Length: 364
Image 1 (cartoon, rainbow, N blue to C red):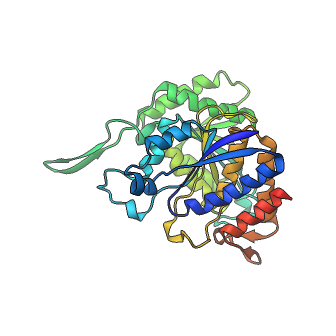
Image 2: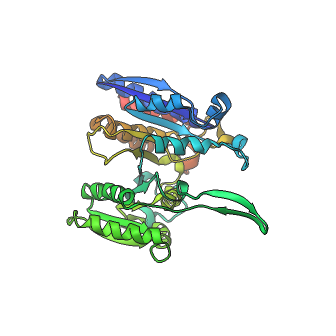
Image 3: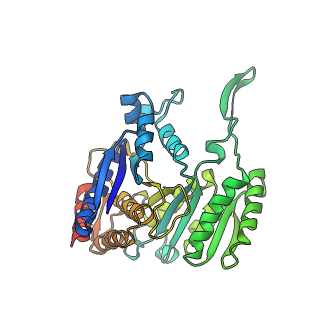
């Protein structure tokens, strides 16, 4: 089979980890007889430096003509001026908006061999295996008015959390569909005791639930959810929430797996289906880590696992995705670790070495 993929390495360690994801993808192509045509573009700080914008129209056009997009990371201190008219993150937000990527999937799985590698007690995190569904194109990040201005009494700023019932309905439906294929349990996270937008969220969620009588729906306030994630993470199976809450909670949840370097993500333009062909953007949840760029340190597992998600949801290659995920677990079971998940009596390896090990396992 033939697929056209757009690769946006981005900033910092983005190019390094993306290379390892592509290394594994190449082995998949050779092993299963697939042709992955790659086209590369710029995003974030590198795009600002070379094209004057965080995401050019040409890059957007390239993405639209592809089956999926693989992204490294964006941002860095070089572009952190709060007064700058354009920031690296603008490129990522624009990409989500322009391509209609409204559903962000972030699976959180604690591998048995890593239960001793986190800051939490093994008996607390053992058995953790759930997935976050985060709304991506609404809420505080896109609501209007959104501005900062000078008043006679000092500076002032405003951000607006805005949602329509249609935006809520489509993301909640993604949560229900995923829950139906898992343990049939969906937790909807909001702040309905304070926010009007959350009250609408909860009301729409209950309306959608009528169509899914086989799925148990539970409403949970965001602060309670943050506590429960640390207190009893195996409690969750599928969690759906709005943009800002999802951004914060998924970073918190990454610590359950030991490191942000372990967690992949998929940003989709529709309801995910096993063996389907939904257009999506795939990326590790970690940032650009500029201080570690070029040091061959960063964990590439998140981007390699993102490649597996890309094969599953955008290319319809479920078997190939399973092979990658099994290879990741096998390498971890052999005792290989990057610095962020290092434990006693394990073998420490760098970015390239971890990529080589997983690629070799995939090809074996």
